[in-house]
Amino acid sequence: MSDNPDQTAVVPEPGAGQTDTIVLEGVEKIYPGGTSPAVSQLDMTIKQGEIVMLIGPSGCGKTTTLKMINRLIEPTSGRILLDGKDVTHVNGDLLRRQIGYVIQQGGLFPHFTIADNIGVVPRMLGWDKQKTKERADELLHLVGLEPSTFRDRYPRQLSGGQQQRVGVARALAANPPVMLMDEPFGAIDPITRDRLQDEFLEIQRTVGKTIAFVTHDLQEAVKLGDKIAVFATGKLEQYADPETVLTRPANDFVSDFVGGGAAVRRLSLLELARLELHPIETDEKAVGNSNGTPVVEIDASGKPVSWRHLPGADASGVALVTVPISGTVYDAVDVMLDGAASLVAVVDDDGRAQGVLHWNDLVSGLRTRERDA
Amino acid sequence: MNFLDYLASNSQQIVFLTQAHFLVVLIAVGLGSLISVVLGLAVSTGEPDPRRFSLDWFAAGVREGGLVFTAALLTVPSLALFALFLPITGLGVTTAIIVLTIYTLYTVLRNTVAGLTTVDRAVLESAKGLGYGRLRRLLTIQLPLAWPVILNGIRVTTLISISIAVVGAVVQGPGLGILLLNGISRIGAANSFYQVLAGTLLCLVVAAVFEIFFAIVQRLTIPRGIRV
Image (tube, each protein chain N blue to C red):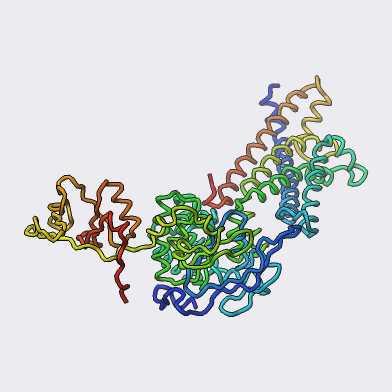
């Protein structure tokens, strides 16, 4: 399998009628001496290429569930299937070498260089030196760290965010089909965390792993998950896509857990690229038009610099704010509030204006267009 | 006759005794460290589950018992311990080495246990999650990370052994103790004070040599990623 570098692998759409990669059947965990099960009679299926976020309050069994998949915690009863194969009783150490595992702060070995850290599992699987070395460089590249700079460094010479990237690279090293992630971004400052999450999604687009991801952060679950599994005291309360969990919580527990502000959080699920935006003009001749199209002044490179004309308002009194089209409605609201502006210009990757989103659109309903094929 | 004259005229004996002192400490510390580190590794384990009996309980028992036992041995006056071994192993090198070895056990065992248990849990957890078995984890992760602490224990125990080895002279053990014991027993006689002085100063020389030795060992054996 390692002969097929994951960059060139054909990546299927997440969960689109794919095979069930991880199956938990009636899995239960009762800790020795414990009276009530930490996880009781859990049935759960994760399809190939999906990111499933396990979330819930502390002690709800989400981490226990994750660790039962690679048998770091042995289930008391039930069956675990990976790719259709029952792994409930196979050798745990050998099983874990086939499954990627990332924990908080990376858990890197401080006495190994970065390249050696990444090569840990390939070496155990008997890869030769050259191949292991090339794989480490390839993965450093993938996670955005320049191999020639980083491969011979030691973990303590890296920032928390960089260490976490290496942790992800190490988990990907032997190209396992399944990755388990235990609050990997939990101890990282919010700005770095946000960037790591974006990069993580970017990497997932190229590697297409089947991922179970424990988090306590609903925002993170909504942002990263194809599906969210909400746990409460050892039971799975709801297992659905983020939109459903936010808008149609299965019961009072989930609704309490999701809490107020679900409508606001849903904004971060709406991508600007999918919205029907209002037109925008950049032509000087359009100033003074009566069809209600705002006109923006652009600089030599085509980037908007200020409003020239706004229907029913004094253009000079309104700050021009822009948001990239790759963002979400949440980002658009954020810049509007920040700039005290009632409208925002949506710009493409080159910074050119693509359209306008008005504050009023939020309450009068956002129109989405048909998703591009 | 002044001190320098004394040194010059007895240089052969003094050099010989210094070398013997160095060697007897080296052998005892080497033996004691080997025993303690192997024992420490063997009984290193996670916290035993209080609700279930397992091998972990046995290991924890040996570990705690071993620490108490070796600590007790350390508090026995060295003069007494040398005397106690006399009927068994007689006069000479063997008794000196056995007793010295016993005194090295506690410090090294204590530091081995401490070093192994203070390894970052996240590191061990991720090792386990990547498919490291118990032995591989112990030898390639825990031991190298605990090594600076263990080595410190060996270093401390060496310094202690240098002074205890002096007492070994009562059982005719080799080393600078012979010089000191001789000087003290003849105190007031010719050169007796010089003997005591030479014995003391050369113990310091032996200690200095060991310190240099450990500085080199430290440099060579502590992995670069955790060197301070």
